[in-house]
Every structure is written in C-alpha cells, then in structure tokens.
Image (cartoon, rainbow, N blue to C red):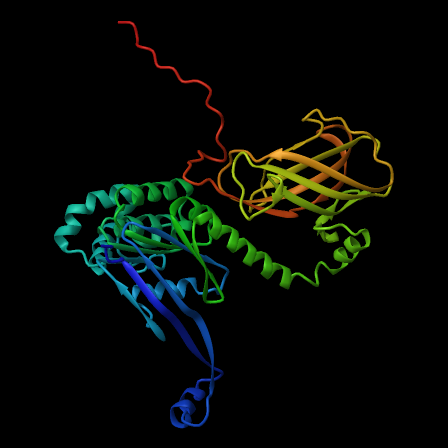
Length: 426
C-alpha cells in the first residue's frame, strides 16, 4: 500500500478581483446582484499534483506564471478560490527573506523568536541552538542586531533555523539564490543527508538549482501546469516558453535583420540585429545557427557537449589576415573563456568581398552552471592580441549550463591527473 503523500493538491485555482477605484468595492457590495465593478485575474488555474515524503520538487516559470501564489496556497497563507490542499506533518516555510525576524533583535534572539513561530518548543530550540549557529556560520554577528546583517547572512540564519526544526515539509521561495555558491552547496548536502525524509518544494529562477537540488520539476505557464517531470525535460520546456515570449516581444526590433535574412534564403538562421555589432565593420555578421551535439539546442548544455556555430558573414572589403574567434561572458558581462584561430593554430586564407559562411566548433568546458552569453568576432591581423577588430557580434546567444549532481569548484574544474599517498619512512 502506498504511503500518504506529504502534499496533495487537487484542482487548485486562485482568482483575484481587481477594482479600478476603492469606491467600486462599495458599489459591488450594494449593487453586486446586478452589476460587476471588477475584473477577474486567475493567478493559478486548476493545478493538481502531489509530493511524496523525501521528494525534492522544483517549481519554475516565467515572471507572472503563478509560482509564488502556488507556494502560498500550499503553505496556507492564501485560501484557494477552488480546489484543496492537504498536508501531512510539520510544515516549515521560507517565503520571504527575513520573515519572522526582528531587525532590532540579535541573531541569537531571532533564533528563539523565529523557531518559536515555526512551532518549536523552548527545549527543542535550546538543544539545537549550537547546531543552528554552526550551520549559519556568521561568526560574531550572531550577537549583533539583524539590521547589521547582509542579505546573505539573513538567508544563512533563516535556512539554519528552518532546517533544524526537523520539518516534514519544507517550502522555499527563491531565498537560496541570495546565498553564495558554497552556501547553496552546503544547503543541498544538508537537504540530501539530514532532510532525506522531508518533502521539499523549491520555487526558483535558477536552472542550476533545479538541475542539482531537485528530482522532479513543475513548470508553470500563465497560471497553468505546463509540465511535470524530470529536471532536464523541465528546463527544456521552460526555455521553449521563454523563447516564445521573447519572439513575441522582439518582433519589431528584429524586423530589419529578418528582412535581410529572407533576402539570402537561409533556413533556420537567427538574425543578428545591427545594434549588436561593433568594430570597423569592414565585414558584418548577419545571422547564425547554433547546434549542440549535431542537433538543435534543447535549452541546456553540459560539459563535453560539442557546440557548432555557423555564422553568415557579409565582407565589404578584403580581409587579408582573418582571425575568427568567440568569447563566453557571464550575466555580469565578464568574459570567462573562449578561443580564436591564432591561439588554436588554425590557419585561414584571405576573405574576398561578398557573402561567406563561417563554421566553428568547440567543446563545452567543465564550467560552473549558470548563464553564459556568446560573442563571436572577426579580426584582421597577425596576432591574437595585435589585430584590428572588424566585427564583434555581442551576446547573440544565451546558453544555460547545468551540472547535474556534480560539484564545480569555483568557475571550472581542472583535470586532476594523479594523486599518490606514500608512507613516511620512520
């Protein structure tokens, strides 16, 4: 016989009534039997799912898809318009950074305050106090008021308290994204080892968190459940939804480039907007395609995957000593890795004016998960650092790197070739 699920949601919907002005509420109360003075917005629409004990479930979706509303319905801070939620066991939530804390209290005082609000007895708090302090690892700040804390310290203390109350259900809304990567790894290991029997639900925008900290993912779209399944398939679904939205919102912006692409009849080509180009522009990249392992990009990439970038190039004047390369930047614009034909010792012949197709391949390195943005470039010269830039095409493609169930130490893992332990002669 199957055990009772920790969370069971059936037909959950949440509808809000939006009034244009405050007096419309009174009108609705008095005359509502014949007129309607509000518009309805459905934040969550007929969602059903269950979470088993020990399961780690992620919830992702575009902004406004209903993620936080759904989590509030699960924890009981919102009442569903229709449907029901049943939970089994002690429930602990982390829905807002610092909720349940007092800024004027010290970290120690807030541990007792917050833990009490979460349902722990004073005896339980005292017995686990040192474990909570050790896990938070904020040093002498434990005796200072919370108004002195950084956002990272807030989340360390909040998670430490929540995790050590031995919850049967743990609901987390985005707050782990505030912590640094080492604290996120620490939380992940703790949830795997000490909270192995706890049902965990995480709302996040981080695809890396989804890949590493969950075993199942729900994807929301416009308040509805668009997907329920494995993390990597969920990431692909999320990326498709994101691209669909981007395509709708960016149609006007790329009309000029798209017209240029149609003139050359290039199938599957993604056009490059002119404002993305810089350099002398003696040649211009007009479009490109990206393949991963010989197929269309599916929304994520992992170490060892082969990337094939095909670029369409319009050369206006002869490029006598062409250099082709690429750079990958993080979301802050820092260039992290790349390569070009000079440092790779790949010789190129001169480029005559006209249309050309450039194809380059590289293997995705063992880098930390996250967002990476591709910038290909063309130069004219002899050296990797001594040439004229003809054309940069800035941030034309977005890769989502994931490292499922694998630790990356810093930015990337370097190959460890040999380890040897020998007994010391006495």
